[in-house]
Image (tube, rainbow, N blue to C red; front, side, top):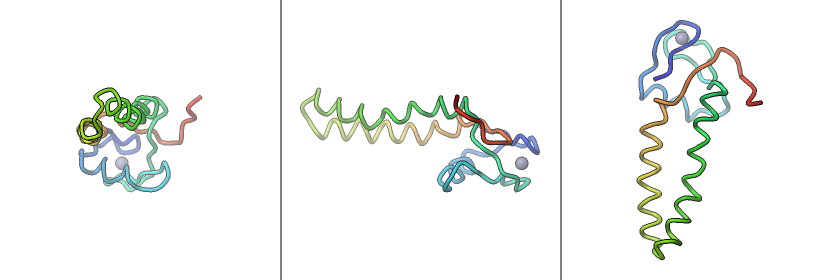
Amino acid sequence: MPTCQQCGRQWTWQQTLRRTFTLGNKMKCPHCNQNQYISATARKRLAIFNFIGPFMIISGIASNSMIVGLGIGVVLFALAIIMYPYLVRLANHEESLW
Ligand SMILES: [Zn+2]
């Protein structure tokens, strides 16, 4: 679970997920109200979730069934939502990916 780099307190799973759905890269810490950003390393790690869509289409084609593709997609999406807060790491400023 992510730890605020300003106050050092840990965010809960629910707090992390709720803050993820805000627009932009800035997230306010629920404890100290300071802006936090997802670290570059964590963003690279989280990029794996972008493959859920294509994987869903490929498994749908491979199994020749849209239902199987959709089913796999739903399961992967649920897993991504559950796992996401565990993979997030915070930084005090916006880090460049390169
Ligand atoms: Zn904080």
